[in-house]
Length: 155
Image (cartoon, rainbow, N blue to C red; front, side, top):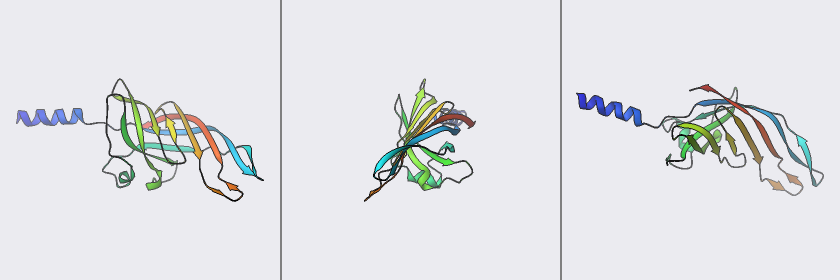
């Protein structure tokens, strides 16, 4: 019985923990719109996002590109970024790289979401770029970068 309790305690203590859920609020967003055959600088509306880790067991967790893996200086994790008030869906989920502080607490996260990569510190800075590549005759998707701050809202 004592051996079973020791094994259980060891398993719980060595399980990887998910990072905290953050509220990230854009302070400013700027970029370029394609107008009359040229790029024109423009300001964009800002947004507020919930960014949270997704467990492999969650249904939308299956949309990450790679299996979750770890190394001594970084680890792969699945995250969802969605606007406040929305429900996360498969298009909100992406594979991210966590850079832990002292090997445990997540210090910085880089998410390479297609056309809208973002970086954030769970309680710190936030950046999001929109680099859509859609082009047609005289149309180009807008290009933008947003900056803001994040705060942990749930451990």
